[in-house]
Image (cartoon, rainbow, N blue to C red; front, side, top):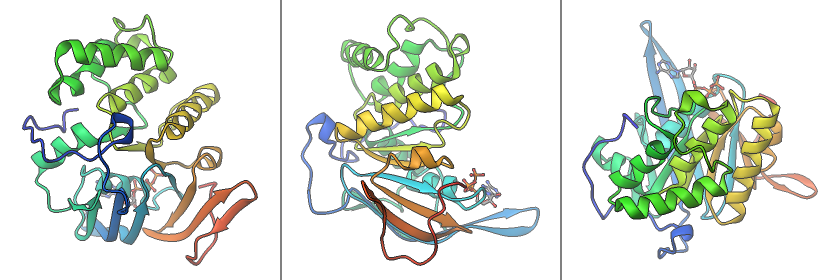
Length: 270
Ligand SMILES: Nc1ncnc2c1ncn2[C@@H]1O[C@H](COP(=O)(O)OP(=O)(O)OP(=O)(O)O)[C@@H](O)[C@H]1O
């Protein structure tokens, strides 16, 4: 939340099926071409992402997997505007967004991109209710509308009765469900999830997987970064990164993965 700027702008809203907004249809919801990101660490260049192309259709559930250091989180951060590519282009619903300012990305995230992180990133001194209401109010909802949406989401996520708890009073799984509620409260067109079960036990992992699948079935477009083969297998399609590049792209079906035409092997284990 602390990355969010306070400016608002009605133009930066991407159509969300869940919110009943109009879609342009033919264009993928998310498209990226030639994304490159290099970090400087202790005087040396770390080439985290080295020319990744990506297309995510509206309603698709894409998993991004690969070993530690492959560039998965960096890619997700680029797609959510939390970090800037050195080069490459990003379109959301056909609109070119890679040149957006920090403030404009903040508006886009608030209205159209929900993000969940491994360590939840909830505001520790705020209650569950306030954590979920915050992005809704920042997006311009009335207090009543925010409260109604929050109540519906918390009930849907099995968090009824937790409204007045603070994050520290909740289990990891419950905190991640609050984070999911916060990410979904503005009916984002796109949900980005970075190792959302990475700090949870197996019960919490199953719960997150079940919830992601449920929202996907309701039409939510999801890009999930995960090491976990079981989580990745819930997606429609898996891309595998190695050393900052895509090494495989597989469409998952009942008869197992169908390769999408990129060289290399499918690495689900990380
Ligand atoms: N802010 C940063 N400064 C310097 N190097 C970074 C930074 N962020 C990431 N890197 C480096 O970029 C490379 C890719 O990191 P990234 O976190 O994207 O990989 P990952 O596939 O998500 O790994 P993991 O699964 O371990 O989280 C790694 O070598 C990492 O050390």
